[in-house]
Amino acid sequence: MSSEVAVDHRHQAYALLKADAEKIARLIRVQMDNLTMPQCPLYEEVLDTQMFGLSREIDFAVRLNLINEEDGKKLLENLEQEMNALHEASQNS
Image (cartoon, rainbow, N blue to C red; front, side, top):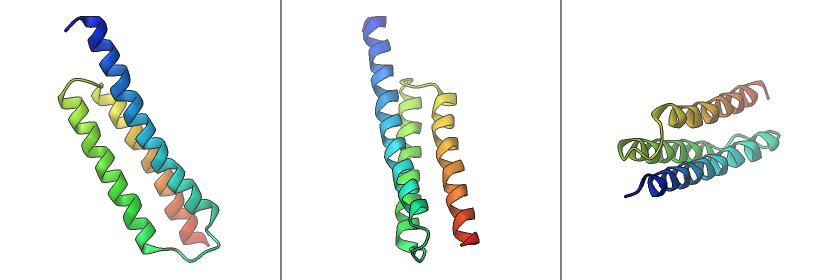
C-alpha cells in the first residue's frame, strides 16, 4: 500500500470516528436542551452505550494504526466533558 493511500485511509478513519462522536454530542445537547423534562434513565443508558461503542471503535482504529491514540483520547475526552456537563445540569434542575 502506498503511503498516499495509507494517509487517505487514516483521514477517512478519523473523519468517520469524528462523525460518530458528533452524533453522540448531538444526543447530549438535545438532552441538555430538554432538561425541563424529567431525566430519562433509558436516555442515559443510550448515551453510555454509544460512548462505549465509540471507545471500542477508537481502540480498533488505533490497533490498526489508522488513528493516533492521542487523537482518539481527545475525541472521547471532549464527549466525556459534555456528558459531565449534562449530569451536572441534571443534578441542578
